[in-house]
Each structure stands twice: as structure tokens, then as C-alpha cells.
Image (cartoon, one colour):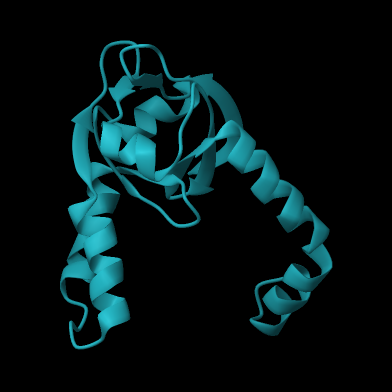
Length: 144
């Protein structure tokens, strides 16, 4: 399970060292893809295969479904981490998520998210202002 948020830097060779506490659970082969809200999603290979299977069987009759599947599958890249837990982030994914040098890696149960640090702080501030509304909605769903 992935939880927590960690500040890291992308080096000059476009590599990001993933948090050491996640490396064993991630394994060496991982998938990075376009996420939602202008971040990147990072999945262990096993979790990615399960998700990709679900995405691949979604009906293609609706434009929004096609768009989402394209966003996730065509935007994905499988990478191997090096001995220091670093992964290379392709330019098209860095551009999609507006990643600068300073990033936040957030653990979200079955995946990691990679955010530009400023974008993450802005997103977090907005979400924190709406905690009561979010809690009420989760309560309606029986989650909280």
C-alpha cells in the first residue's frame, strides 16, 4: 500500500528517484502514464496489467470513454528503475504534468502520483478548503 507525500527533484538527466519506502512494492518494472488533474500516475506492473485489462474492455461507443482510454493507454510508458530507484520520465509526460525540477510523489493506495510541487500545493489548498463538503459526499456513499 502506498501512502504519504514526499518531495523529490528531477535531475538534469530527467530522472526521478522514487521514495525508498515504495521501491520494494513497486518492483523494478513500473508503468508511468498520464493521470488526472495534470499529474502522472505510477503503477507497479501487476496493478497496471489489471487496470489495462479493464480499460481495454471498456465500450468504445462513447467519445468520453475512448478519450479516457487513449489518455491512459497511449500515454503509458513502461520503465525500469535503476539500482538507486531512479526512473526516466519522458518529455511528453513531463510536459503533460508541467513538471519542473521540484516534484511531489504522493502515495495513493495502489498507485503513486507525481506532481509539480507548486501544482500539488495549489491542489492541496483547494481540497483542504472543501474538506467538509468532501466528507459529506463520502458519507453519502457510505465511505466516511
